[in-house]
Amino acid sequence: MMQRPTQAPLDREAQKKAFESLKNTYKPPEQVVQVFPINPLKPEKPSEEIFLKSYKNILEERGLTHTQHKVEKSINENKTSTTIKQFYCVHIYSPVKASFMGLPIRYKICSKCGIVK
Ligand SMILES: [Zn+2]
Image (cartoon, rainbow, N blue to C red):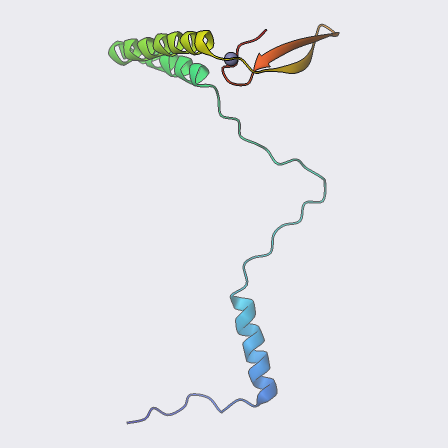
């Protein structure tokens, strides 16, 4: 058995309107336009050493000595590996400008291992 149509057939204009309204329902929500030129906040990843140290402090507070020692060990291992990396690195220094107590200072950082010259 054929089902009865639930609405009258649409003429050309009604079809267009129906199509437009359907199209609007599928639109993604409009982006909020920012009035001020705000720079996007870049979440900075803390260095692994800082992260591990804070993690160690948390463990220390909670008295988890076993895990704490493990973390301490990995901090020391990281230090050693950095030292080795810096020792064998073919340094590629890039100049960095900074100021210390109002005095401009220049130093160079290796872009491969991060050692400061
Ligand atoms: Zn280097």
